[in-house]
Length: 448
Ligand SMILES: Cc1ncc(COP(=O)(O)O)c(C=O)c1O
Image (tube, rainbow, N blue to C red):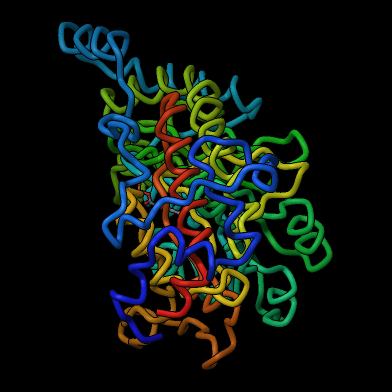
């Protein structure tokens, strides 16, 4: 698209002449959209062209995260007065009771929670694990330690989550596990994934690092698979600054995973545990969570549902309105899912339906004061480590060119908006106004 600043400098009269009727009804400066037909819409000049900005409310603190209070400060101060590891078990007990699960281990970070899980899986060398290409390397690179083979799978471009249909296409006789990731808090289709896994004898290992407290059909994320790992790092829905946690259904998995990175815990296993004898040495890693992080995680767990509720209600207030605009949609979560949000509110612009390019819309929104950017994720399989043979005894299975169209589509369409972590009615309404204003000008923007 050609960019001509002058062509965007339409006067209000010019705009009303050229904008579509639907578009003109959209930006009403606080007037309800239903009344647009009766009273001509007040259509402001785009900020890009010298008009007033739609977003003027103070945004400082609106995305503040983590939110720690006096209770966290007091508990950490207490630990400093009486140093010890008590907070670790307290956090693990709290996690068990929140999730209703049998076995939990807290770790120094999510990467090592997930790595311990991979060790616990104890799969034969060369076993293939289905992973989303639209994902992070943290639990995928460590597969090389255990001779596992990541197989990169496409995602559904509406959810950005692993596509079960593509999993079916990539199944081989060596496929042994699937690792779903709930991208930015939108749960995967865990029921379909578990059914698919059962049908083919695969283990389900959740990377739940973006979805603390999310649910599918009332079942908490983390409870669907054989085991699940969560990052507790600063930006995550449950932040401990740095930390991780893994949960297990089977005692054998738990003991094996714990022994991987805890030299001091095998003595706590039952007498007949095959891992008890590794007390003192473990297997060479030390992956215990710091007690300060355990304190933060325990207290934050008590606030998780409320923080998710507050943040998600800001997101709903915004998205319920702006997804009415042509060509603008959000990351899709099924009605029987309770999604949460990790760090950003990801949305999609379908350029054809919106009548303007993603880049032009983002530029116009930014000028209005919206904190928005184009969002594109580096596909996992493109990182050098996955194609260099010196790091793997069994090479990862990379997708052939053009075989992950869902990932490509998500990257073509996605935009990133802030996740507001506290009540922000004024700011959210101004964001809505900014979107409606830009969309009201979309014909003109589309011509630039
Ligand atoms: C999806 C996902 N999995 C795993 C991790 C690794 O967690 P950590 O950074 O706590 O090691 C992250 C971290 O950002 C992540 O986003």
